Length: 218
Image 1: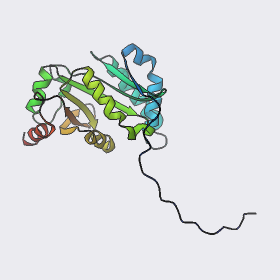
Image 2: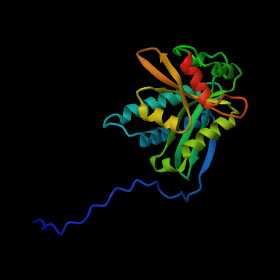
Image 3: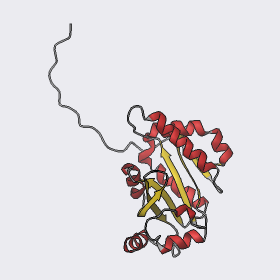
Image 4: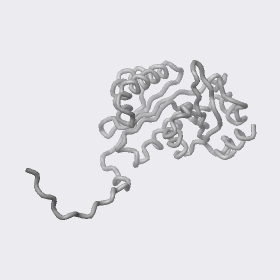
């Protein structure tokens, strides 16, 4: 028999405040391609945990992530940065953009002049992925990972390509200071990627507003 309902109580409002400052020490570790290969399954697990996906999509998403990671590990200059506390809680990986500019192939319109110049000088680093465990998102870990990865390579411009249908990912990059410079079309299929850049340094690289302005007028 079910007990009769007791007196009604006021419903508590959901608490959306960020969690308190972390207490567990966090360490960042840089891995080469061979170390990344040994950690691939754990990285894929972290990716699956970090993504809010529809039921049944987890396996496909995990496979896509592993395929992208493997493809990137064989690019010249590949680097992977992990965050541990002490378990794996985040990672970021990428590679230097080639001076020949082939990475921008399929860019619609004219590539902003500043971006082309920095690419030709070998000062652009592409970030292929930033993955952070949900419990760490309020601690600025994504910012820390991208800053460290770009600083390690002395880049003056960060670059990334994001599927334009992934609005949450695009919004996440913009919230960390990246600016939209246009679209990139990549075959096969109707894949359309949004090109985002993050100017760095003082007095050498253009400010984010300058790059975005040139992208709009060209």
